[in-house]
Image (tube, rainbow, N blue to C red; front, side, top):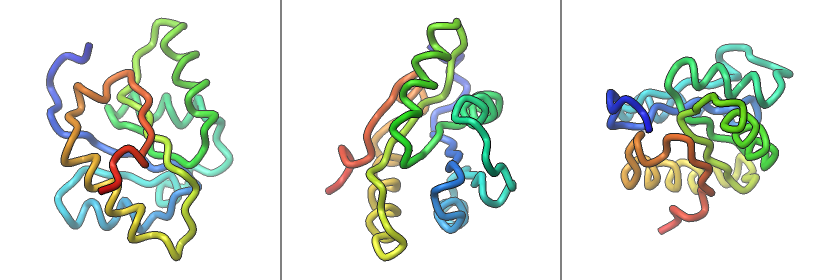
Length: 125
């Protein structure tokens, strides 16, 4: 379990998610960083996850292989702040991605996401 220092989820979007999502979330008062904006290109999933864990951020991705990276991290005795796997949505579906992400951020705490893997479509309303 986390040390309880963070109630709200901080989000790190991997390089396949539009940087606009992190920007829009920050405008709404959430802590969010984008791999694109940070120029974290061509990183292995485990490196993205390690970066996010170091910064106490959950990873939002379209890549289902992140579940393997999360499982491997736990098996090696290292925690993470959560992985959120989204169905691959096109730029035309950006409003859906934003809506589902905001719903998740409204429904879950950082402690509930700690060391967990969730699927974003669970938060469609």
